[in-house]
Image (tube, rainbow, N blue to C red; front, side, top):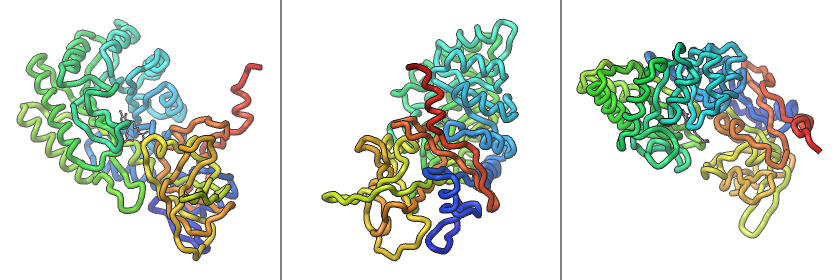
Length: 425
Ligand code: LLP
């Protein structure tokens, strides 16, 4: 985070709080979230996209404090389950500023969305149309969008590319599925189609794919106008804005994105003879990612043939991203000052498989040893939200820091928590 400060003896402080102190107070592994950084990132979005609706993609990381901060900063929420939705609403988050996504919404997801009154539901498959219409009932009313696949390949890894036809999300423009589903939605009087949605993928670092998406989405809007006389007031371009995980890596330039998308949209709509729709964006990673930092304690250091394995007290159960997407992180030693030369090491977790690698080619002082603390920056998005119960080590806590104060947001998962769910014998 921007508030990170070097301290004496090789420690780091975030939000005015020394990380080594947090490790002592809350134990390790611990996830630290810089509240000011989260809020700054929300404001950066609001400034860059002053007339757009900005929805925070809760899948990146959600807890009640996070939902509350988003509310205070004037953002909406993108949720993809009854769980995310209900947790947010318990904080008083206004449901009309929430959008429900999902390629396979469960009956419980739809029930919660309708009961709580979410702003829009994004339809992702033809079978969902009749199901939703029936759930809304003949006298009901629900705003919906349609998730469209524009046919654009973008994103940091094959598993997080969603703009092309060969993946499970959305209805494609090219083979007519999107237009067909839209015609069916227009036949349902209780469903009000407010706009089209697309999400190209995640960890996208260039503006170009978004401009291509604007052209294709407006192309479809233009055909819908010709065929049905339809004018859609909203266009949701999803999220996917890429960030740097290590120094020197590229990140998406939000100001350029905002300016170029606006220009492209204005031009495409003018050509099509359509009014410019209100833009919606759904950043997740770019808000939460850089605001989070994971702190681990080293449990063992082992030299093998070619490698030095530095094993810490967490691993793939709190951060599955290196194992899933081959992402590289830059851990650093904190809490003491070392004058030892830097060495290439492999930082691994404590889980029972060889793929439990947190940082394959980390550079740490050669004298790194058990008891040391390691900080992994850019840990705020898709770490804890993807955490698992593997090996029953318990999921780490989340601590918020701000103005020199730390407070616990989510406590560590205890053996008692695990035991309580286990009701058979
Ligand atoms: N909107 C929709 C409909 C999405 O599916 C997603 C992410 C977002 C917005 C937010 O995307 P973001 O701005 O955070 O890139 N677990 C993966 C990322 C999966 C993203 C899934 N959808 C990872 O750790 O990289």
